[in-house]
Picture 1: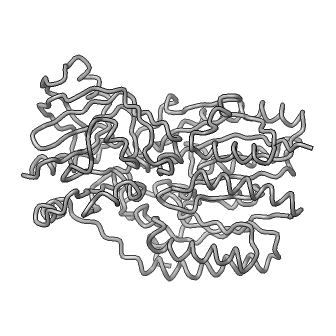
Picture 2: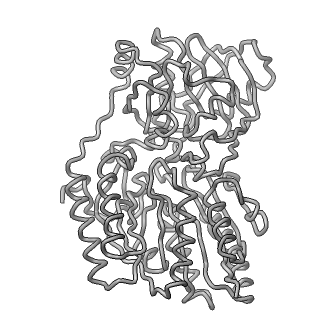
Picture 3: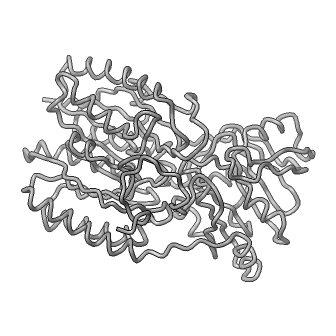
Amino acid sequence: MKRRIFFSGLFHETNTFVEQLAKPSAVKIARDGDILNALGDDSTVDGFLQTASDYGWEVIPGVDYRASPCGPLADEVFETFWEEFLSRLQKALGGGIDAIFLILHGAMATAKLPDVEGELLRRIRSTPGASSLPIFVVLDLHANVSEEMARLATALIPYQENPHTDARETAVRAARHLWKMWAQNQKLRTHYLHSRLLLAPPSTGTSEEPLLTLNRMARSLERSAGHLEVGIAPGFAHADTPDTGLTFWVVSDRPEMSCSHSLEMLYREARILVHELKPTEWDLSEAVQQIVHEKKFPALLVEPADNIGGGAPGDATFILRALLETSLEKCAVVINDPQAVAALQTVAPGQTARISVGGKGSSLDPGPVDLEVTLVRLTDGRFDLEDKQSHLASMRGSHIEMEPCAVVTHRNVTILLTTRPTPPFDLGQWRSQGIDPEKLNVIGVKAAVGHRRAYDPIIRSSYTVSTPGPCSSDLFALPYRKLRRPIYPLDEE
């Protein structure tokens, strides 16, 4: 008999330190049949749909809400989602379903709900007919996993790579785990441990410590202890919630002692590795001087404090100001500034105009830069990912919309102005706008780790710089109020 799977998604990484609340219009909604149209778009939804088709499952589509990382969404957004979700779930339950499959982020928060995913799972389990159903959940690697999430889900399956090159494959893996559970009649539970360790986003790359060693341990434990999944989430430090931080869990049908032992091994190793971390960021002016001296082009100036992929506005002017003051030629930055784009709509290519650029999204920025610019081109901002495994595919699929864009120049700097903040995770962002990033000398990048897969193959030098911003790597500078203490490094032990 054909298995029937109810599918929905709720995906938002919430930066609670961003000053502006997200607008409801930031949420993109797919319902019912629109969800099925994601087949082939290289997203996590596509990964699940294709695998479900391979197994001959019938997918019952519910509702999918998602927004790019930004400040908190209003509580009403979650309540509206829940109303839609519940009505579709109840209808599906009436026709009979075998499991619920969810694609969540794991670090979503609203003003009243610091653990949106935990609350969602609690409400699902309280729905008549759903209390004992298998619930399989795909999570972003930056999830702030709570004990409630682990207790209520049958299985939490996280991305294992940062940059997130394996997002689609994670959904495939989760669906295969669901099939295996049925095929082998497994009685799965999710066992959980919070490490009481807090990692700044630049320390969450999986090609570096501590994640490099911890991921190897997790895969080894899956083989040696026979666990279905050993999950690691370094968390999202720019969310002020009780559960923020590095977490571990084991999805297994093995005895409690075996699961606890695996978690304890990861915990002990993590404590050692995190205490040995020595993250460094350059002073911006010193980094620029080093680039001038070394002339290893293209060179990156990476700005984690304005990390678009972490919910920052993407309009900080620090790097722009620094490049305008140098003698370096062929420099470029991306600034998210809908107002500047709108102001250029009546300007013809080749003409000049005075506009106010950036500095509008955070009080930590020195403010807009007034420039006389030459318009190169106006575009609709659409592009397809050059790399279908791009970190960006985990968020938006392979068809990207930056919305109306303008390319302008001022002396030595080319500025790509966007209407929608778009993380710099794919070189198609530049090439679609007529700019070859490989021919640039210096590129300003508003990211922490997710840019590396795209940029590392084309650059000769990279400098991560320290600037003020809502995604600052200086965890001591963030005004935590809800975070459960003690936690390292904010508290020594």
